[in-house]
Image 1 (cartoon, one colour):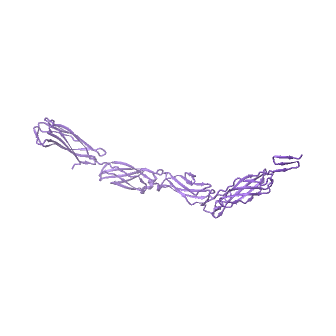
Image 2 (cartoon, rainbow, N blue to C red):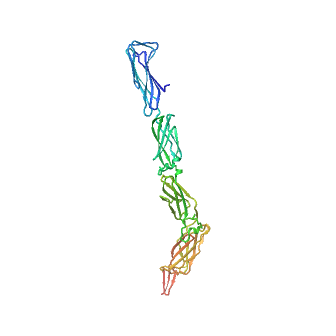
Length: 469
């Protein structure tokens, strides 16, 4: 049975009576896969109208194009019905992609009434050629199926994959081959230390028995999966146990020898990172960030120190040469509350302008709570000297009043009775708790008498003089 068949009829009655028809029949009998061609046959027929007879005194027929043939009819011969003028075979070579076509011209010429020509063309069966491979993008470590997409079940293939300068080959492959990239993942990762993925090229050579039908290529991506390949990072955070202005260390106050307990506004937190890039990637950068938005970065692992901290929220991240980032959160710090110690400007005043008594009004913020089991303690004191001199007194303690409702303290009272109202004194007031020391300077104002009685006159201070007559 023919693969394809074509028929073309040509009315060759020059008188228009339909006496004769020239018919060309072409069959595609088979294809030659190895040689990329079709085997065809043809039949040229003369058909005389039913119940008529035509006599040829002379005549000839001809074929040209994909098939070539010619011949003459015998003179004084009677024709009726269907007469085969010629038959034969021919081959048609196909294009490189397996497509093919034919075109045959045919004609008949006689001395009486019947003459004409025409052309019969057709598209031949496409002959399967070299297979075009394909594969889906795949993560390194997974299995990828490489399909040959072969046109014939009899085709076999040699498959070679190339990834950088790594190659792997399979022979006698039919419809597909499965490649478990886990068997080669170490080498594959080493080819893309600075990229998330790379292009893998498939080369597929197709065979029909012993005949090589050609080679075709295709590409797909091999990817270093981010979840598997992002760097790991470990971050250790500790209080630096700094020595405070009071001479105490943070550890003295918290009692925590692990340095995992920090004090708000006081502690310095040091965070040390340890990062591990994976599968041939290298470390590109490391970042440590505080919950308040401050951060520090470096090209490699380092120790970042955050000063006078206000949060226990810290994170660290490491980015590798592929651009993948691993992160970690720090969750093992405990923060104790604290209110920064302060002292407002001191108001010095007298209740009697010519008395040697001096009063002070002082207030500020003070954390009245405890650090774990260590109670905070407040001391308030002052020292003084006569203005213009250099010798200070010893520190004199005052007793402040601690607020019961908020973190504040106050003092308003007498600080001494031996301050000559006519002199100016320089003061330094100091407030101290377990963590901080704050000082502020102040200066007294000499007393101004309201009235002065002298031998010859009486003075109303600064305004009125009454003289003895």
